[in-house]
Image (cartoon, rainbow, N blue to C red; front, top):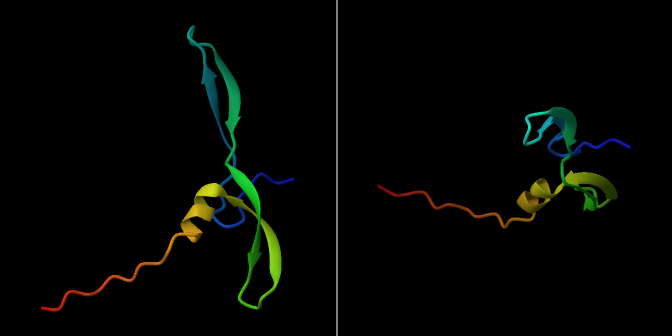
Length: 70
């Protein structure tokens, strides 16, 4: 099972856990993924893995900015 966001492409990153005594041990940070059902433009339902940050961005209301008139 892939731990990758299908929308943004986020995937696990690697690094070191550093203790107080400065010992370094390998570890991984995983993206916060959720299975979400998405409806495409044809009306078909599809289940995708999406990061929660991408989900929050998609659910934001779209604001249209008015242009300044000089």
